[in-house]
Length: 115
Image 1 (cartoon, rainbow, N blue to C red):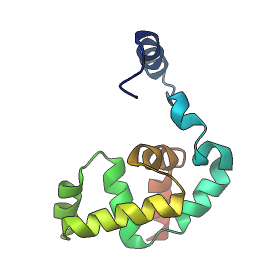
Image 2: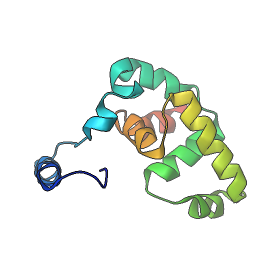
Image 3: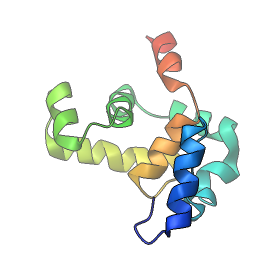
Image 4: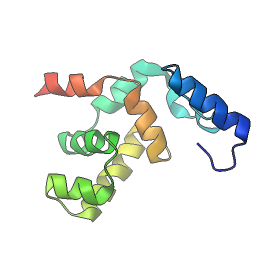
């Protein structure tokens, strides 16, 4: 949610989330993910390496870089490199868009089948 959003936008977001929907700010709605569709998102997520999938999974759970580094036993700089590569492969500009792309798919179940 952009900080510049007005009260009406915040109320709309809360109402949609309380009804079980996902609220996507209009600034993000037109980004690469929605326009390219779920099939394309699946292909892009499928192109991630196992290490990148681990970082994406932990990031999706809301962990910050330091926590991800600790969980995986790698350095902060390696987490940052993985996040940058994930964003490049998914064709997004920020972590919010990464989360939206990942949320569009049940990739946790897909990942479990991969193992």
